[in-house]
Image (cartoon, rainbow, N blue to C red):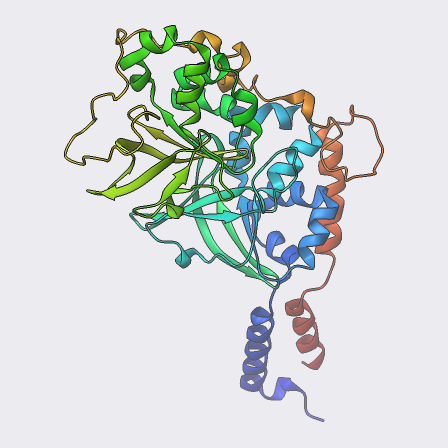
Length: 412
């Protein structure tokens, strides 16, 4: 039998064909992650949660938003820093679950309109949205795909559509942050008056925990326009006005779910009317100036004016920048923001991470699944060492390319 050495062209063509065939073979998730060095930190984190990693291996039609190594370098400067620093295992687990989306969401499926996709984050300790917490996705000029998450965090898609047997991986440059509750979120968007008013009116428990809530939140300037009157109101009257800004429907009112003419039933039993005109979204007469700020239990939209339960039929006038307040009152000076003093102190310093309710999170070591025992003093390095062993084991598996190369060597 003649060796391939007598037919160098045939040997070359055979090697090329075999190599191409091997490269076209679908990769499993392990192979995909191991072949992308900029995902080494994510690989370490994911494989340390053996149950999640194993579950992914059996999924079909899944999308993973994988933070690259640069994203891990940003963690100490984000609100996730304390959780990672303290090895809060269950909180970090929820963060990881928030990066996994059921279904295939290819990069070209996004356009200029926000969509809100469900994630694997369904634990009631961290979310109260039916069907799982969502992440926003949109395509902006460039085109550049951006994902939005809690506290207005923006994550840019840097490497799209990496395919593996069970789905796709999108590489992003910043961690998604699971949404926080209303009181924790308002300082991030300078909505301190609304947060303080909700606290004073004893409504914080409701707006923080009610499932699938939609809030229309007046900006600080709206409070300042009638602030003195609001501060002097009896508690019951303030509650009524604020409840008219709360929609507790069966579905969360993301902007994509609010077409022109939509009516929403508020907590007072009265309706709000959505208008889309002159490229702006309005609720009654108030203009929505910031949309789709995600919360643990729903969403909030910032509006430029108060809604008046005594004038529910008033409609929008798109020709006016900001309509005159319907609730008559005495304005405050620009440097006076009412109700802010009612906010909990820890919330006002949320930027430092002090508002994260650490007492509600497990303090087990990152990577330990349910039922695994151990002490909370084990360092993160031990977790990474364990993960490194798993990675080494994966690397020891011969790939189809190596097998083909060995076969060709034997024939020649």
